[in-house]
Image (tube, rainbow, N blue to C red):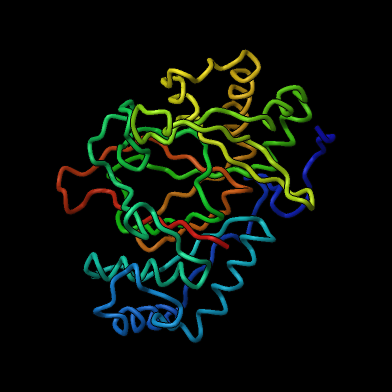
Length: 301
């Protein structure tokens, strides 16, 4: 293995120091978005593109946001997306339309979006997914380059989104526990949670490096731990357990993390390679019409 070195650059930030990550939309931006929603009437969300969701003014801002995700701090929060009063399918077109100007919208099963809301699923079930229940989520990264979350409604309480710089966490582990950092570059068993067959399980390192030495992170503690249910999956080694413990501890360091209490109209964008995100447990409204609902997109750069 090549010598592991500390990461440098704008994606290596600390939550208690980072600023300038909020991007408030102007009234002109909002008008332009609603006009694009109207213009796309009759088009299914999966067929929304930059071409049929024109944003002549805002497109430049969203292109700059994409560049920030790729080459800057790796995250941003768009504020003031005009979701109020929209029908569900209008909100979906709105989310996909914005996403299409940031990256290429990728499929999530049979759709191009997913609603993150509590569906009463048992988190321990073999086919459960983290977006289907109200429990706490450990720090993790999603598939594809970017993940976006558009908040339609927050929970009654809880559900705080928290993010952390993966390179900053990597550096902390390397400084204090170099032997654990090395283990994170080795293959780890994961669980796709598609059932009990062998195809549900695969291996992938937590850390890899691009040819130019930039860190790429792929971590999901819940899916690593649940992989232990696979008959052919070996138990986690003492080193792996220690590495996960270090990740859990460092990703909860209040100096490193940044909390985002997402409100209606907030749209969070994260580069999965250089950020990890989590969510606190939440309690929902008794009225189904008021329950927490976020639209999730997966984007390729």
